[in-house]
Image (cartoon, rainbow, N blue to C red; front, top):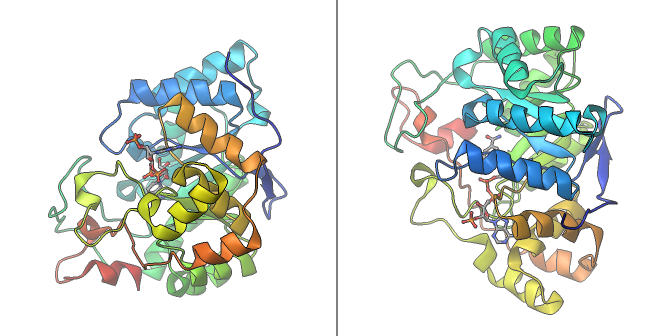
Length: 326
Ligand SMILES: NC(=O)c1ccc[n+]([C@@H]2O[C@H](COP(=O)([O-])OP(=O)(O)OC[C@H]3O[C@@H](n4cnc5c(N)ncnc54)[C@H](OP(=O)(O)O)[C@@H]3O)[C@@H](O)[C@H]2O)c1
């Protein structure tokens, strides 16, 4: 067996649960198969990963469940030492319990540690669609509809099927309207976050409301699907600020992105099916920290470069993906 990594930093949620600062992303970006991803989950847990970021729309929870069942059975890891998330997809906002029960059945778990509303809209597209796809039933954000979905998550929480609740792909404006209406407050906020898209205002807002931010696409999602690519996007791992710091430490730019995220106060969920990558992504948070000066330099890598624009979720009449982020 390869090395086993310990002493990964953690965050304590407002539920008092402890969540590792690094988890394995499990979205294969239409590029990696469920077999490859579940093999990586197995290898990652054996290397010391204790958090997995799952979702029903990633279409691999059943294969990941097989791996979890095997590793719990053979004593590699205990259920209570893992932190496992899942998310309700946009087409199931009116039947959240059914969606959650399906995820639990697929993952072969009695509960998940954190359950998210994946997107704050009931708008969905077929898996693998192209960027110009539109669903005529799509609608703008509605506080009432979102809260109806959230109250269903609160019931799952009451029933013990989910230990904490999370929101994802939110904005300060949306959060400020829904937070006062929540009986069970969110413990975490999943948000796109990488050096060229730091979302400082949203990050500060989450922290000030005792919500732990979890940053997705931490490496700038170099393998993201075609529908999420645009000619103006920048590559985080090629940014001068990131490359400079990488050269100073003699490390890969990916390592800089992950150290920066965790030292800034994010939980980060890099994806990889490659053993050397996922081991390095975990291990780097336990050694050789960035200096304050390097953290300051990386602040300057901000380019306001949102990668997951969500344009496939636009509703009839909406013309600009920025309308999703108001
Ligand atoms: N809540 C949401 O709406 C949402 C949206 C997007 C993502 N997510 C979550 O966030 C996770 C991460 O996002 P992501 O997968 O889009 O992007 P990412 O983690 O930024 O990028 C993953 C890619 O980076 C490369 N990579 C990984 N480790 C590396 C290393 N050490 N050195 C060099 N390259 C490395 C790999 O590319 P190659 O395979 O080409 O080597 C890998 O496929 C997802 O898997 C998912 O769980 C959530």
